[in-house]
Length: 158
Image 1: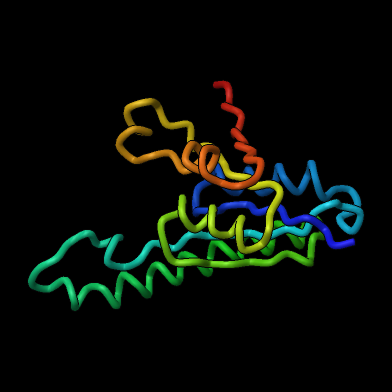
Image 2: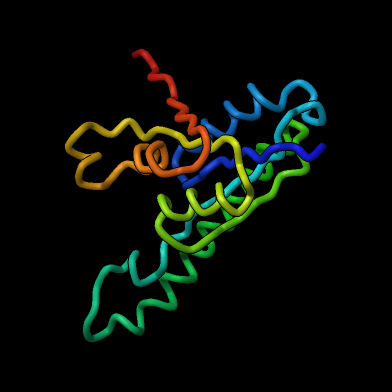
């Protein structure tokens, strides 16, 4: 019997790495081979044009440098994810960096892998910031064709 896929969306934030660690602890420990899921970690890499957000004279010269930096960030995010998984003895993880808007990339990954669960971290934005930036977790909760788990990092008390 083939295991169902669990997709974990990652960006470079502490919240998303916390969500990955939480998922590994609750669904893949202590015996990862006994998990009911195969793990797919997806990082949505913005396109250089979207990251720069400018057009006009000089934009074309900047794009290759921005694209190179975005590829390095994606590689770092996936390498860190691999290290976290290896530390928890989860070795059969699928790691993907896909260019595009995180909302669309994650919903497409759910379809591609026939996932039954999508896990995303919560940045804890307030209503105004969420309205301006858009909430990936909110979008996915409404549009992904599977259950969506939003993992919130506990606030530290001072």
